[in-house]
Length: 260
Image 1: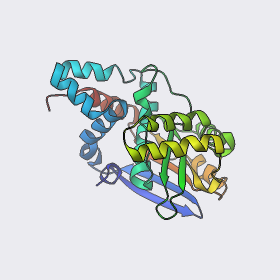
Image 2: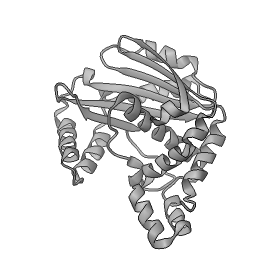
Image 3: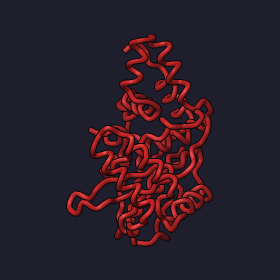
């Protein structure tokens, strides 16, 4: 069972190609996913096998210090990163598209925000074998409001709704560095797309993902209603009432490698 199915109750509405999904924590759901989410957070900053190697060589305390150096130390930085992490996991669990590169592993500095699209989903259609993309923008706020939603939509609409070339090229090049043939194939397709721009809008989905302490703001539905039906449009809210305490707790748990 996936992270979200164990953690939250969901409500899903659909109208043509517009999807409005809201998630609320189940009773006991956070306890159910607490350890798994901490492990997931770690995996977005470094490969789990590399962390395990650090533990074997240096012990838990030093390995935890190395991991901590990759993670943001400010609440603002952690909030933004966790929003992208939760969005990535939702795309893979609920939509079935890969988010093939964990981009926080390539940060210039742990407290620096990364430029470009927050997350990119990419995969080949099972029937036609044609490339399909998802361009995503993630927002994590104690109090979500209209301005944040409007700004996120403006970002999604940039570059005629396409993934920004620099973001797509970043993902493509990381995949081309892989030793896995399927990754190389996907990386080549993404790199070609940077130059050719051959995908029509109906093959580039959009997701506006939010996690907030005040739950789904009315502007989310209004925003979705105003979008066109020429592509899949996902608007998502995860309601976490104690938003900031949740972030602090999850990062403390992720940094603590313990003795297991």
